[in-house]
Length: 167
Image (cartoon, rainbow, N blue to C red; front, side, top):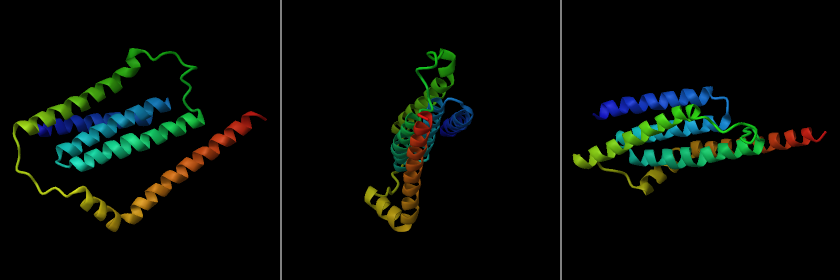
């Protein structure tokens, strides 16, 4: 059963990612990407990695997607006031993929509680943090610098576009 759920979630993640890449409206693309990230988090939970699943939701689906939305709003790429209200057919793919992810997560949680497995030695959050910053400290710093550069670049492009409009 878990293998079937894994394949369903993997297909949902791939489909949501493809839709995120091909979507023309940036806000819709971010919603598809968040759906893909939630599917991946459920897959990590299914693979007995709840801490990685929590990181996936908190860091990627939470913080980074909010940063992307901030940049899109700041650059004024999405013009919701110029468009019409979306038709239900436009929301159907995101709703179906989100429903699949949520239903799979509920099914995995219910099946795990029904048949408890032998507890594995889980590292504490302190151990994960120490290992992350000791062994991968440079990678963490490089990623934070990339996010900072992306934000500064978006600010620069946003100010340049606004000053170009006034000429």
